[in-house]
Length: 332
Image 1 (cartoon, rainbow, N blue to C red):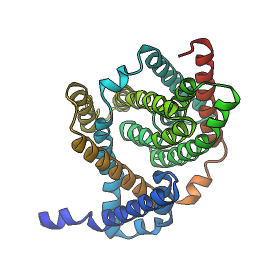
Image 2 (cartoon, helix red, strand yellow; image 1 turned 90 degrees about the horizontal axis):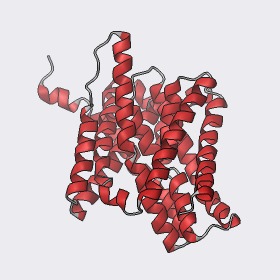
Image 3 (cartoon, one colour; image 1 turned 120 degrees about the vertical axis):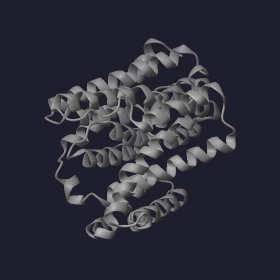
Image 4 (cartoon, rainbow, N blue to C red; image 1 turned 180 degrees about the horizontal axis):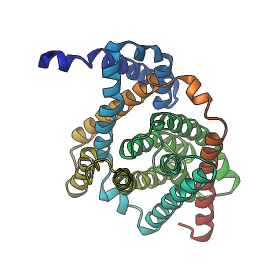
């Protein structure tokens, strides 16, 4: 029987490769201004051959699953009640309504297109909440499925590409529609997927638009908590229907996430602690997506066809249209 030291060291080779990919992706993102998750995915997929070596497989599996859960738990450092209450109840009602509507309609559309409805839940949640981070958080909470990692990878690629495109196009749309800086900030914050792209697009319009967009975006990030809880209940229901052992009412990483959100709402974390938690969360998630990339063959993604692409473009366009409609009916 292997010693404890040998068992502890077994994941090291694969984990080290995933960390190197994450570091490389971070360097490229900082110097070439593109989503770090997209770089991590592409670099990881280029190293798919690493998973063929038994020495690397265990560490890559740990990075793809274990680090993902740790990173999701640490997302709680980003969310507190002050962020939700800062804009008043109008944006809160809008965000809650549109996030729920986007996920529901995405799930129905996925079923109509012949997919597992949970793919619609996953991609709709990523579109409605916070892009790649939400995709990985929801993937960790949803029931096991042979194609779940492929669906997660495709969703991360899709929301990263669409978010980058929206960062360029949406400021032009707000100008063409004649929106003032505040309304433009609400639109940017309520529609673009990833936080970094929201910040880039918002402050490209004006400081006021950037501030508003960032706060609205954080309201969407706060929706990650209830949506993860729903995903956990879906997992329990499916396990019960299949006659297998049900997962815990709340997985440990969801409990940790909820605890951090509650603590951050009651007592603000010192900036050094919050920054350290956010940084560690980002590294865990980037390393996890690099590992998922290494476990995926490019041919697997090519085989999915055009329908998932159409679904994610439709989700993005739907969210933008609903936000513009809301602003027309109830200006903020």
